[in-house]
Amino acid sequence: MVKRDFKSRYLNSVLGSVWSVIQPLAIILVYTLIFSQIMGARLPGENNTLAYSIYLCAGLLPWNYFNETLLRLQSVFLDQGSLLKKVSFPRTSLPIFIVISVTINFVIISTLYIIFLLFIGRLPGWEIFNVVPLLFIQQLFALGLGLIVGTLNVFFRDVGHFLGIVLQFWSWLTPIVYAKSIVPESMQGIYKWNPMVPITEGFHSIFLYNKAPNYSSLLPVILISIALLLIAYYTFKKLDKEMVDEL
Image: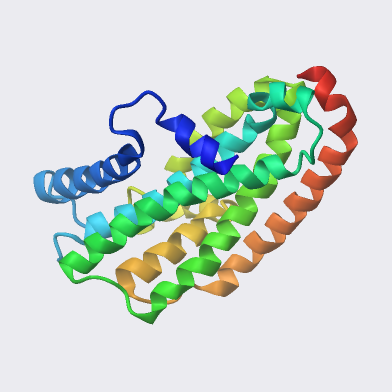
């Protein structure tokens, strides 16, 4: 299923899977050239002209990974409706194949980002291995939330549309394209309620400052993720038998 999903993205295109390399490469080039070199964007306290590009990509690439996972999960049962009606198989395998498929795409993008950091001499040291647990926490959170939305979306289609709007606001309430320090102190409190803030700060810490993430700040995200997975499992089991009739 993962292979079929990956192929279907580039079906009927001349370059095929080469687009999976071209697209992320274009993202890195655009953010590096336009923001750092043309617009002259600088991070507060950083004189390096490429610091903002590193900061931007370090937050944006994992966010896109999170965003794509959620959007694919919210429609996973609807997209595979015809398959669910014809073949009997564990429905819980569908979210897993989505996560694997999205992860393959993210690995390709991340590899290009790593090559970019290596090329400019800003590749982190051993701290880079902290990316693995950080991504695991992020995807655990995305899987729990995505499963709840994906299950409810079968019965209430407005849920899927609402998620798209929420993600747009959510991305701007997460310090990805701007530094958290430039936000007025009176508004800093909103970040305490955003689980993606400590995760994004963790990636910035690794790639920009070569430091391990603050794991104590990630503890609430881990607890929320576990709670979401339990709620997702309960919701899915509760509505599982009625799902095929609604598709």
